[in-house]
Length: 326
Image (cartoon, rainbow, N blue to C red):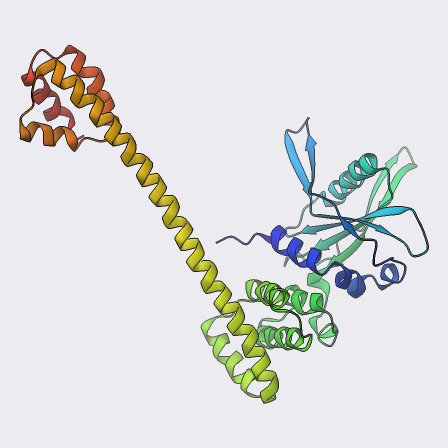
């Protein structure tokens, strides 16, 4: 199944918004009034000329300490490299600024694996040597961050986002174990623990050989930590099984409803055709009736039109010979 990157990052960053700001923007965190946050509803922008719609990932209304006026923090996750991203985030800024008439603090999270080159942090417009506009935004580019710099950070966002940082192939097992050890040390409630461990499991899915090495590495840490990490792994596995069962039941119900609707249409069409045939050609023999009952909805609808020209049951037999196996 394709990964819904926007949903996963929005869940993580909305649940741990303060922790995200603390981890990557301590200068901003030091100024924020932490009791002022208001998450705004999904912001949908329509580009009439291009016929497209755009949704801002996360918009939070906040206030600085000691101040009455509010401003907006806009966080945009970008899971694929985009040549004109700086223009797109400027466009979001302009729409938000216009709608709310509040200053906007824009943050871009680049979560793609490649390219690893530094991404732009501004959008500039110049005409004939005149710098008309220079719009700046903050950037977190995960593939340029070393996971080792975050492994000792007592922060749930670090525990999750290490899975998307710069990881050598040989380090994947170690990073996953370190992510889970960090999560276990935070003593989070079950729901938030599952959110983070699920994020890690999605982006750092190990192969069979890597799982074996993970088990060996797990066996080498302290017994108490082993127990805590295994509790996380077991909890996430159980959640996955429950979601799988729920999806299976949901698919089964949907298929059942579709089959029920199809069967209902078939029975309704059959009843109409049998009544029309009874009036047109008289009582049907058992074998002929069974052949009619085996027709699909489309075939019954075709027969309902054709029987208007029938004179007797022989015409029906000819029609069935031509259509009942098509």
